[in-house]
Image (cartoon, rainbow, N blue to C red; front, side, top):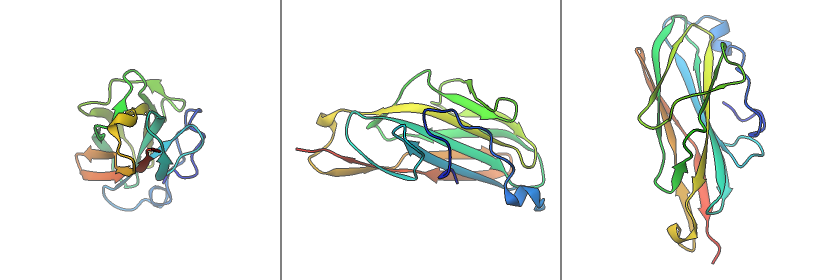
Length: 165
């Protein structure tokens, strides 16, 4: 969903309405995506090393024909991937360049979205140091769960951490 997104060092712009939203599919529906970056492009799968800083971006898009209220994002980070407090930014039609937002822990209600509207949350993380990882490749799978009054969907990103010994 975000694979053609902007470079990680630049805040993403709110995307145009999806094809489904432009065609006004009846009823509630939405898409969710999650990608990672080492500051050189968004990816659904990434190979990296211990102690590396990564950015994660989650995107929500209302692809249905009804307004969705109480859109809440809940992030599930593996213990080896540490959220950097104060780095979360929320972007949407009102804030296309993003604004600093509350901590991502515990979930965040990002508001209500009309058909065709979308939002993104971008934040920084750091992988724990070498002592945390065996001399092999470990796969981490952070996830985002988007809850609305009309249902729940989730997305994951795959992070393969290789420790060189």
